[in-house]
Amino acid sequence: MAFRDGVLLFSQPGALPAASFDELIAAIRAVDMDDVRRQIAEAEATE
Image (cartoon, rainbow, N blue to C red; front, side, top):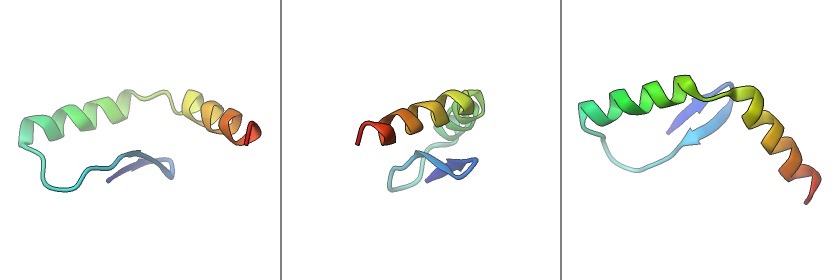
């Protein structure tokens, strides 16, 4: 599992190869968390 700012961004059982792990870390760092929080708020508002 990978969390950023308390938000789950990745969940997959098992180990990743080193190259895939490095790519995952880079992708998580690149995520626009303001956009993620906005999307979460919109989804919760429509429930």
